[in-house]
Image (cartoon, rainbow, N blue to C red; front, top):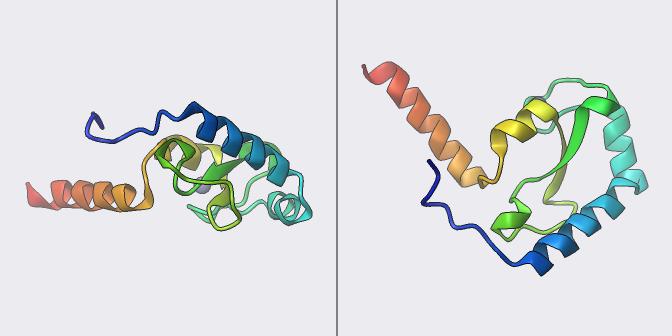
Length: 103
Ligand SMILES: [Zn+2]
């Protein structure tokens, strides 16, 4: 599955943006988000240890470590998302809904 997805293999981009994400993790802005503990995707509350920093547009898809693209989310949401872009996630959700009601 997902073999139609184009993955960015630029290791330098990936390494640079991951390092930048680790730096941002320790800025007051993100420390505050971790302290609040609200998942960007499901809206649930979690202890800081259950939260991760996630790129909305994955680094492997050309996403960058900026405030607009880096959000705090729970591990379950991070796992479910993997390397898909927001548009692809929406598409999947629609497909899943159609599959449920269509048969
Ligand atoms: Zn979540």
